[in-house]
Length: 137
Image 1 (spheres, rainbow, N blue to C red):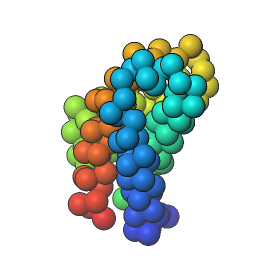
Image 2 (tube, helix red, strand yellow; image 1 turned 135 degrees about the vertical axis):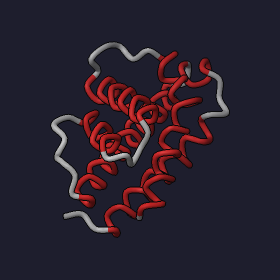
Image 3 (cartoon, rainbow, N blue to C red; image 1 turned 60 degrees about the vertical axis):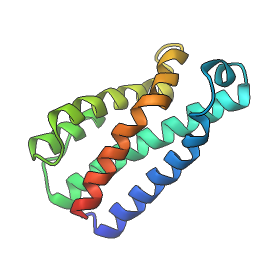
C-alpha cells in the first residue's frame, strides 16, 4: 500500500519537471522544432511529467484503496468515479495519457503542433491535478 511519503515524492518530481518545462514555454514553436537539443529536451520532459502524473494517479488509487485500473487512462476515470477529480479534468488527463503513449512509443510521427500545444496549455491540467492531490495528502 502506498503511503503519504510516496505521494509527496511523486508530487515533488512532477513539480521539478514542470519547473524545467517552464523555461521552454517562452520559446516559439520554430525555436523548439528547429533545434534538435531543445526539441529532444521538450519531448523528454513532457514524457517525464506525463508519466509521473500517471504514476501519481496510480499511487493515489493505491493509497485510497480504490479499484485497480486496467490502463493508464483508466486511472483518471477511477479518480473521477470516486469524486477526487472532476469529469472535465478526467477528460483532459486522459488526453494527456494518450499523448504520453505517442511520445513513448512513436505510434505516429510526433506532431509538433500538438507538442507545442501541450507545452503551452496542457501543463496547467497537471498543476490542477497536483493541487488536488496535495489537499488530500
